[in-house]
Image 1 (cartoon, one colour):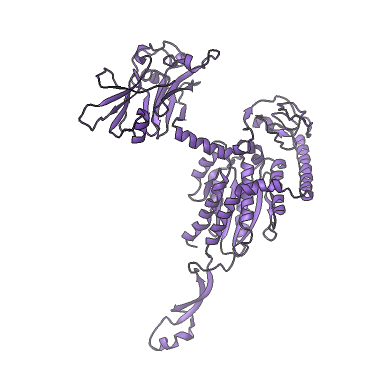
Image 2: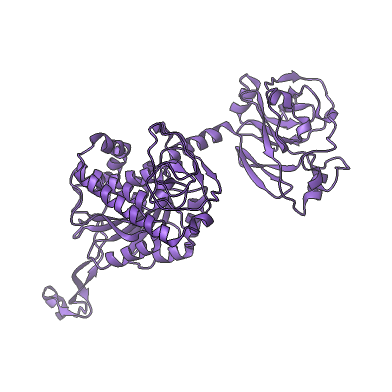
Length: 593
């Protein structure tokens, strides 16, 4: 629906339901009025308009101009519905005039947002003739003064009742309450206590869309993977690969096809009793964890044996395969700029390890021959002794720094790679480390170890045998992918971190670093953040950090908030990792050894 401003100097009787406390920015005012205007202003709204802009108010003494975005029908003339989706939940009908007008202004977004009951929304204009409008608690009416458009967003009805249901029905004409949330969105709460955050500002929506696209990697043209919960209700028999569908059609349930979802016995995703994971690129129908836990032990054992055999065959195939330049380029090109950034960081690193030297001008120790004359004149600080001394600023390293990358190659990395590209992002990060540290052996000694349900010390790159060329680096990436596909479910993040810290502290180095790459899926296995924090900080000689490269919902953000400040990072885009590593490597320069 389109709206246009109409200037008016005459007095119109109206009771404002909302008046902004601040003025629109000059660029938003000009965009709303389709002309260049620089003036004090206020935005208000009443029952007869989508919005009104008062130009000159409150600072100018001269008459103010009012530009109105008029409604086709005054809201006050529309009778409040006597029934609705949640009449029974309210415990009765509204018996008085609402005390709260759910209307807010978003000045930076140039929008006015209202919460309206369905009977005050032009549903015939919102939905096609052949579509029945859904049962809703309310509609958000978003009036955008930049585009001169009005849009309606349905707010789902409440399915529960709270003690405040009766109170809400008396203060609001719709079944929700509305408030502004920052500069580009609003927050609603319904009668069941359900809180929803809505982004309506165009700039905020575009920014969030870009972040989402970066997170799931839509640039490769793959369809988005969607997970659908389902119950199988059928028993498992014996694990098998399953038949190959030449057309790659989606298969749900059953135990016949390889690459199906939500089934049993065959290789696929979201099912139970299968030998290993197999992603065919379809929507995932996921059986419950309770069904998976109910799989008999003999079936689990058979599936595990079949998975181990398939993994060994896959490793043999990787070792014998020819170098695939196109496949390696896919990962290398994605991080080429990040590799250059990482090398700049490495070039700027300085020595941190203390050096054992003669400390002169001491009151105790061995007599310093160069101070004999000073001793005859009464000077007391004429001795020297061996001790550790912080290196001078900019001095070269005497020993290389020691780095271990603890990469997550667990089953969840493969399972949810179709959701947010977490496994590919981990492989890109490992590729970046291998390429970035090439020819920097004098500064860094590194290795890469994997952790999954199979264990916490899965060798990927040995410190004394790092990859020297693209073929060897591609072999590491293929091994990561294969392990994640064929490994058992489980999590050894804590054990892997603890073991790495204890191993590294035994080695002589300028500094010790452990960087844990994880998908933040710890709560599924009952791992409390406090335990992870305790392990990360268990040895002051080892600088341990976590980088979360995958997350279901806000898992990673919530986990990061519970860990010690500066010890964890969230990187849903590989481009962020060089900056994170720079923070990690330079943070120790600010701390005392």
